[in-house]
Length: 177
Image 1 (cartoon, rainbow, N blue to C red):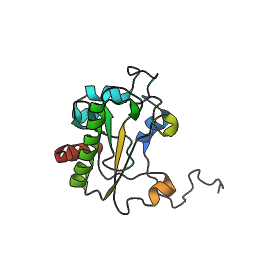
Image 2 (image 1 turned 180 degrees about the vertical axis):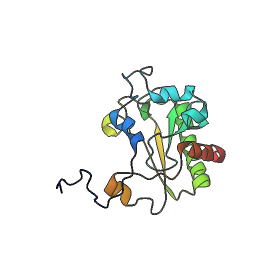
Image 3 (image 1 turned 120 degrees about the vertical axis):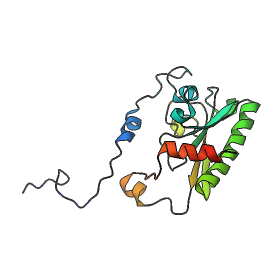
Image 4 (image 1 turned 60 degrees about the vertical axis):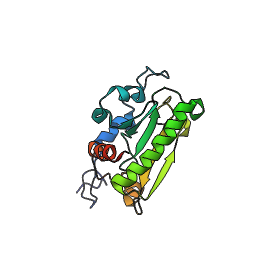
């Protein structure tokens, strides 16, 4: 018997494969530059149908969209249509509607999924955790439940999401007030 751990020998581990994450890991589809017309997904999404773009609601200055790579089911982002990189660059109308959509996101997530808490915040700039170099400043709304953190993210670096994004989008759009 050949002794090479992990090379096909039974090891009593189950594998949960997530090949769809490889596009994110490799950076496929990331913008080619820092301008608003350089492939930014936040500029492309509003031109899609709500279903194709995973848009939950549209406003005059911002829209609410599901995160394609969510931390939890229902992970929303409130994004201004205007491509500005910082919270401090939003004008008063954008800032007001961003706040209103954040509140509406909280209400919709409570109604649709019974969320018990939330992480709400922004990653401004790539060094602060933004997934792309020059995204428009956007607000994350991540629903939380007691016990939603289990061994999977800690041991397997894998998040188990119990619902397809299209189904989550439909539930939240229906729950949007």
